Image 1 (cartoon, rainbow, N blue to C red):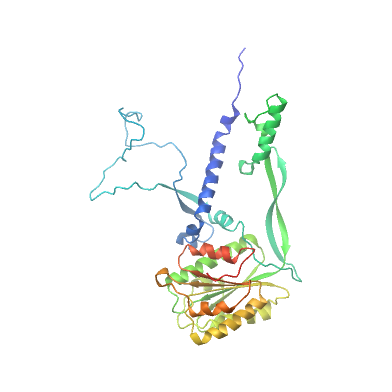
Image 2: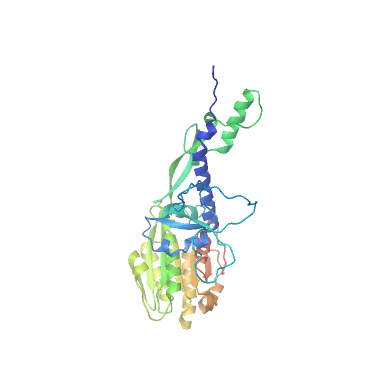
Length: 377
């Protein structure tokens, strides 16, 4: 009589390795979000395509066939020792070779939606207040039950270990080990719609002649991710787009991201238009209002006092007013406008300076942290 025992851990080895690899990808992306957020191929995508994210020192193991080998099975000639390094096959080419080893990297294929979920997982609209009407639906995920079947990404490790130890204890071995399918426990979840008060975002952008390619790219990058954030977490939030030079006007979303302008800068025109739109269509009694403005700060000096007065009115009427000032690091300085805003003393005003593409992620976190602080960086 033959007695056999199946090792079920071998059946699960492939899925477990895949899940572990996916988790490592997520961790690597989280560690490099500041650089990934500012990638131009993401900003210029249509939002529906997958993108390739380079992740250093991470590669999934797989078998490879070398078509250049027509005999043998890959055995060596002997004489090697642990730690010996071997060059890559092929023609080294001409010219002087480098002496430092290259860095390997793995390109992860990630959808924009999955990337947005990682970026926005702990962000939200700050200072959200209850209003007379509640029409803003926010979708959340709530874990509601534990089941014996499910996908490994929802594996509840703590309960799985507990079930394994319980089964082993019944069998007379009070220890952990030899996990079977019957030990596995998975979280089950459902989507929950939470009704919140109305919210409107007033997006203002300087499109004057002093805004160069770098400044315009940074402003559009921030607003690209801001829109992804709002449309990922909130279903009915309203968005108003304002472009300005010496004059301000309300534009469509497409015009906001694609049209260029020229001329001088009078920031007060944008703030005055924003206040008029808020008073006419989004009264603070019924709406949570969030104005954001991005500029290079190159404003007409005589206009700064009026800007401060109008900005203070926005702060008094709104949940949060965010001002982002963009300068290339080579010519970084505090503008007279940013310095003028220093007199505003309110935890509902946040000013940030951006000198590098990686600063876009920091601005997102500053503006959409649920507990913002009054800081001019």
